[in-house]
Every structure is written in C-alpha cells, then in structure tokens.
Image (cartoon, rainbow, N blue to C red; front, top):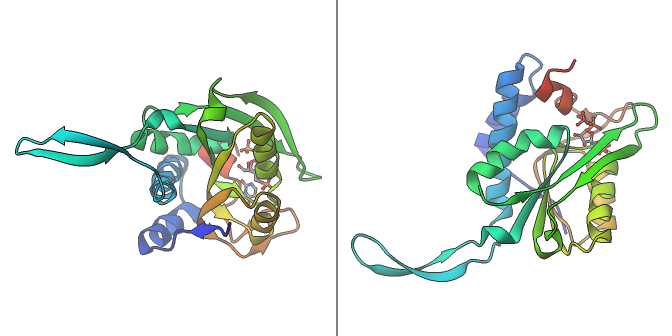
Length: 208
Ligand code: PRP
Ligand code: URA
C-alpha cells in the first residue's frame, strides 16, 4: 500500500515549528501530540461504524458509532509515547501496548528491549505510533513481532518518514498502511532524516 502523506497547510505550519532547532521541549511535545491527532483523523477515514439509533433533543436519528474495543495503540518507545496523549484524546477507550526499541548508534540496527501488549490484541486493529521512520528497521521489527503473535490488521502513524525506510516497509509489508505527516528527502550518513527534526526521543524528553 502506498504511504498516505498529509498534505495540508496546517501540517506544514505545525511541522515548521516542530522542525526548528529553536523549538523547546514543551512546545515540541505539544506539537508531536497534536500532529498525532491529525494522523489518526486521516487513518480513520476507512473506519467501520456500527449502525445505531439515538435521540437528539429534537428527534430520533440513525447514525454510526465506532467500537473503540476494536483498536489498540502501540507506541514504539521512547519517542512514540509522545503521540499517545493526542490519540487518546480522540479514542480514550483504546487499549495500549508498548514495544521498546533503540537503534544502535553505530550499526543502526534496532534492538528490542520490551514488549507488553493487551492480551486480546490479535482481535484488534493495531495502530503503531512513532514520530520517525528512518531506515525502517524499528518499524519492520515491530510489524514482524505483531504478525508473529497473530495480529492481522496494522497501521503505522509517523510524523516524518524517509523514502528509504518507506520503501523497505512498503515492500516487506504491503498490507500495512503507513500515514506520514511528511515524507522527507533522504537519510544522511548517520541515518538521520534530512531535513528531519533531529532526534525525536531526545527532543521530547529533553535528554540531550
Ligand atoms: C528513533 C525513532 C524510531 C527510530 C527510527 O528511535 O523514534 O523508533 O529511531 O529509526 P529507524 O527507522 O532507522 O529504525 P531511537 O532508536 O532513537 O530511540 P528513542 O525513541 O528511545 O530515542
Ligand atoms: N530517529 C530520530 O529520532 N531521528 C531521525 O532522523 C532518525 C531516527
């Protein structure tokens, strides 16, 4: 499936602040959370609703409602947790799993150090959250792990993606729809996204 890129002046506006090296931790966190909501909005365009009937103060009407029990969020630690607040504002009853992953600074290979998910996760659509998709290594490992335990429906929400990583994930997992706020230009020699925003985890948590 081809990656869906949010193409909207509001996103460009928000990203311009997010990317700036002068943006501090508080504002950076708020923007990551906010852009997460825009990504979720796009990702739910194809969501199935249950038919229900309600009464407004004026009359009865037929409408639709989402069954929040059908979904789980899976932030990739650490940076993915920055997107959780926002998406939970929209779907407060979704369950949350966590996968811990760090990229080796020299080999760029991801190392998994934590995996804890809701016990009925295989019955849910899993929405992976990570602001950055660079080489795609962390995304590939996370998707493979979810599939190995039987998860059938997966979406991946990221803020900035590199073409190299997108190609790898699209080719290996054509069934996983990726949503990116922006697809950037390329990876540099340290596998950082260019122009990017630097190290998302460090900027969210103020660790550097
Ligand atoms: C960052 C980011 C992704 C990963 C992307 O995490 O949040 O998980 O790198 O790179 P990849 O596509 O090349 O795998 P990092 O490993 O820096 O860990 P952190 O979130 O704990 O800082
Ligand atoms: N991880 C980040 O946080 N930033 C990048 O540019 C690449 C990987």
